[in-house]
Image 1 (cartoon, rainbow over the protein chains, first blue to last red):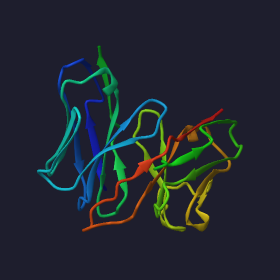
Image 2: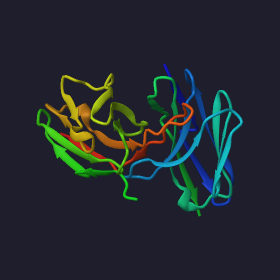
Image 3: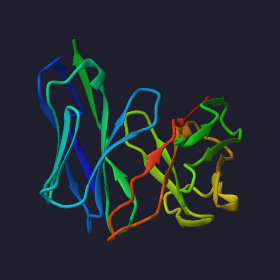
Image 4: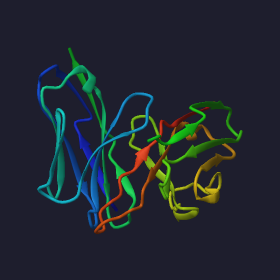
Length: 109
Length: 118
C-alpha cells in the first residue's frame, strides 16, 4: 500500500528564514510525486510534479527535489504570504493519488 | 481557463438527512475525482471516473454514498443517510488524462464543499 509521511506537522518561520519540508514515501512504481499548497477554506493548489529521482523544480521562492525515498520542499527567504498547508502526494501503479497529512507553515513578519 | 467548479460551498444538515454535491470539471478533462478531506488530514479518494465510467470506487462507502457522472462532464456525489463522521470537506478534482510515457497526471482541485452534520 502506498504511504506518505510529512514532517514536521507544523513549522513557524520568521520572514526571510529559509527552511525545508520533508515528504517520505513508499510506493509501488512511482508515476509522480506532487506538491500542493492549500490555504484555509480553499482547495489544494497545484505547485509541482516530480517524476524521477534527481529531478528538481523551482517556482519563485519554492524548490522541490526528489530522491528514491523522499522529497523536500525548500522555501528560500519566505514571506508571510507563503503561509499555508503544503500537501505532498504520490501516484503509483494503482494510479491512485495518496496524500500525506500536510505541513502547516506559518511565516511571521 | 476556468477551474473546477463546485456547489454548494457550505452545507449544514442533521444526521440521517440526505445531501448532494455538484462538480463541473475543467473543460476537456476526461477524468474526474471526488475526495473527502477530514480536518487535519490529507484528501482521501472516494471515487474516480474516466469519462462516464467508474475507474476506482474501492474507498466509497457504498451503503450511504453514491456518485454519477452522466454524459461524461459534470458529476454529483450524494450521501444518504448522513452520519456525524461524514462532516468533512468534499473536494472535486479533474485531470486531462493525456498520459505521456506512463507519467502521472496532474489533478486540479475545486474549492470544495464544507459539510457539517449535526
